Length: 207
Ligand SMILES: [Fe+2]
Ligand SMILES: [Fe+2]
Image (cartoon, rainbow, N blue to C red; front, side, top):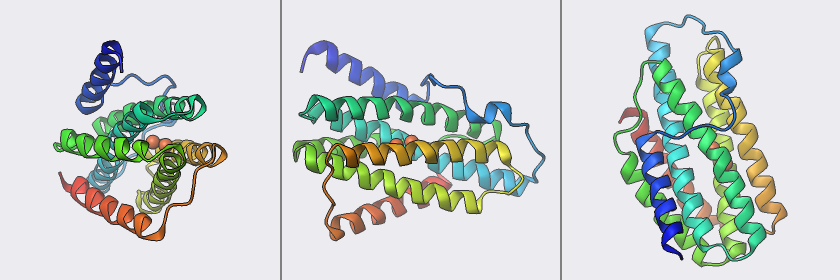
């Protein structure tokens, strides 16, 4: 790896953790008017968006870790394209947390470091498994966002617009990983991923 690349990746890591990522597409919340919800509901929506934001910090780290080790140019390109869309998600969810009066997770550096290591490991196993891991991650994120849509205040259309757009992107990311030849992960691995995301989401809802 060149020094330039290393500096670029390090810069991306810092921006992801510090929450100063610029979206390339406007937030889907932009055309949706703010609706009045009570404090409890707003707090719940802010906490759910903090969970989503942590998920996106992890996505940045995973994609970076994976793109660094991906072998085929097609796989690397797909990872980089998805990573750019994940940057939008990162910026949109950070903006929505602020609008709801919440704050991002204090543990973001930790989430980032852990996910980067997992991404680099998945990448080291070769593209088939790298893409398999990506496809499964996206599938679990998609399910998770569906759960959030059920749990979010029905009137909070602004938050819902962000979550819905993210979910649509994640579905496409999964489809592109499958199209590039993602293997199917063994069930114990899928279960371990579910368990670790459960731990992450439970903590991130609070801290
Ligand atoms: Fe995302
Ligand atoms: Fe994604």
